[in-house]
Length: 542
Image 1 (cartoon, one colour):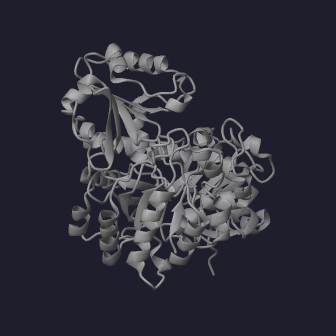
Image 2: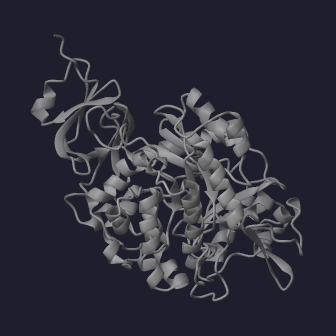
Image 3: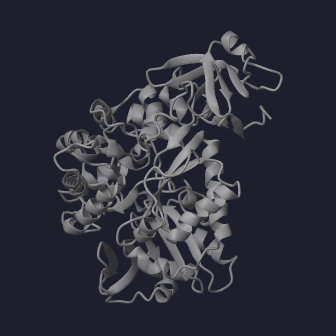
């Protein structure tokens, strides 16, 4: 009998096979799938003259990571925007300097887009004002988004193009801020759509460039799979087309699970007309759930809470829809057979969504539908129990606590953040919580997400809710097999069991043998996608 030779072998290190599966010294991949795992000597028998050999040199290899909630196209296209997220942005003056620097390179009338500022981290502890943006870019329309993406500030030129004037009525699910009857430029939640409509249309090449750039960035962190949780946020159906074009052009070097933006601001009728259904596609591009929005962000104080914000006693956040409307969408999509994923961060929004799921499911629990609550940040133990009963999955971002945890303490007091993003409770309830970044809202860096899951420490070292800590094995599981479970693909990827996809990430730091503080600056050295080398940080395996 002819012996099968592997296409690729990674050997000589610590290969983590997945939660509960232990470790091996080597993994062999053939025709894109895991052929065998075992000791280096056992796998040596599978090496042939054409096998690509990758030496691990004692490093940790894990199943390819899965960012279960990342706006990947926006991450890539954001590389062309003014970056307002850096550590050097500490004041409104820093924001204005960055906007002026971009304005100096543009002709009058050209748009300036910026993203990433966090007013909590600014010396002034407030959002910029439109007049301040006018001073540095009087001849250019400007729109800058807060890091959460749920609000932003427009200058006068942008407001003029968007036909937003003093006295305009707030749109449903949104807020146009005015002080003393004068627009400040701040637009929250659905009010952002007013200025979005005035944006110049991007070309298809711009979209595909963004997709490719985002995927390559992900590969550099060890991500081989990603869920885009709102395809259509930019330009509706054209966003969807862009992913398909990128795939056909060979410019989508990553596996994608795509959520079409649904509800009143989405394009669900097009999806229904095309007869797409959750799960359609292949291992590279697959149709995901219908995506709805229920509220905003905790850092921006628009997440819908049952109790007011600690520093704003009149503010309970914003509901995007009333109960009847969002429950109607849920019932319709559920009846058609879709998985549903709904953005809900505050406990009041989670209650609205969870009760809608429960009504749609009825008395018979249908855990195989795996409806999701995206973010699912601030919830009660009763809601966790009800999620477990109905088979509803949380899709959280522990990196929110790392980046924004201190802001949560300031805005919500100590008790609610301590119980937020409760990874330990979710795992104990059997809810398969995934790992993700919500990029570009947060860094796409998985090591800082894993760090927070294990330590519950913020970037400033504050410990929030230590009882919700999980093990490093569970944290890696959140970024691998749990993410696969959320897209019905746990039998395809997420572990390095024989027959699974040959997706592997190799780290320069052994997370199992080092203290968590060493993980913050850890890096991915190699990423293997379907047995092929997709990223090589140091050019060692070329």
